[in-house]
Image 1 (cartoon, rainbow, N blue to C red):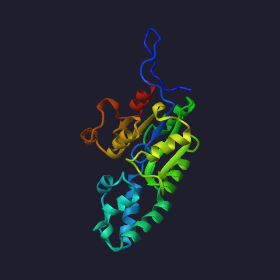
Image 2 (image 1 turned 90 degrees about the horizontal axis):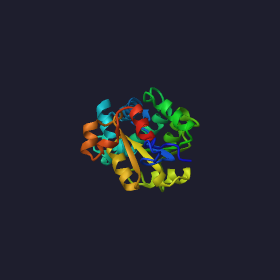
Image 3 (image 1 turned 60 degrees about the vertical axis):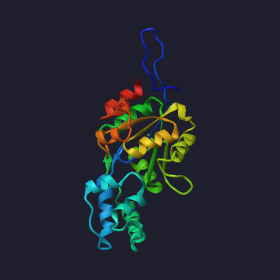
Image 4 (image 1 turned 120 degrees about the vertical axis):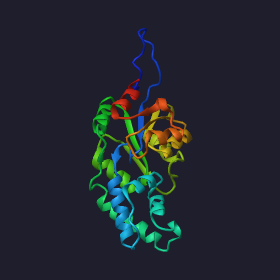
Length: 234
């Protein structure tokens, strides 16, 4: 059932696309996870006497998965002999503390509830580890989100299209009937690689100017949940 659509003109003709599903990025789009990511990173670094990272430094590190985050945070990256231990320590700490202060961005739960009432199918696709994506989706969004796909073996992480296409397969919705919503340069490349419509939000981990410089379409950007819903209802 096509439930997100343009309202039409006075002659009753349909204007624009209809979407059966919305695929959301997680960090920086639905959830503000930055403080918990920072705290877990610094806890792991502290175990090996490594310098602490500021929240703004971590903001610039996230978006390409946990391994890439730790690679950037550890001095010398993967060449550091303690890299794997820090990586494992982060995963252990984050599994226990991923919900300490993480919360949905303002209006997100109301948005998802409205879409759910309309019958829209929804999924999360993230470069975060699959265990964390499923845990956060279950705790914060329960029955609102049907499918949650994170980084895992056999599924290349974004900006490769694998995880988006896997989510759509699980939803049973073709890409032509779906829209992707994200907040980063990784998401801009992901929608292009997946051949799917997209909307980029600016309330997350990247600024509007930065996203524009990375190729975001200024006519498909939302500064708040109301603007995003307006795009979906056109």
